[in-house]
Length: 162
Image (cartoon, rainbow, N blue to C red; front, side, top):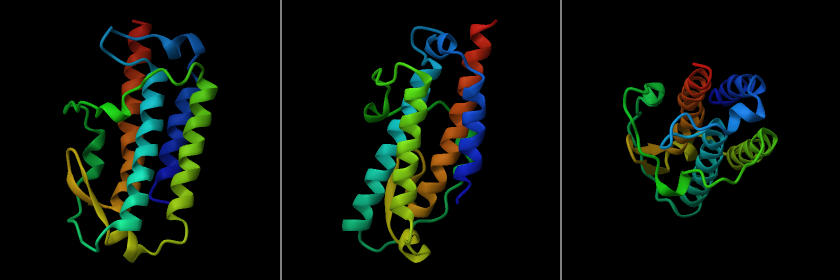
């Protein structure tokens, strides 16, 4: 649904090839380790689920134009992560990270299960870069955001071995 499964499989496939030691190495002082990137993805999906839930409960019916969210994967544009989704060291192992990601994905799927397209298309909340996006686009964004950070994790792993 919304390409989430395929994108998550790609992410997990990469994570399977990462050792615990590689996962915790920061390529540079101001850059995230693979484990921190995974925590960011977990925090981000958790926040999106919360926002979608709020929009479903209290949101007014409104439309937003389709945004080019597939461009999320373009890492030429650096985006500073909002404080709420910056890693805080919540995960100590890859298994903890995978478990966290599994929980947030279950929450996402539970939330959108049995919601009709019209509802998801007629509630919006703002994205820091794209502006107002409807809930359907937000759900799809989760997958594109994961692919963006998959590229980042690949760079981190390559940097460790350079």
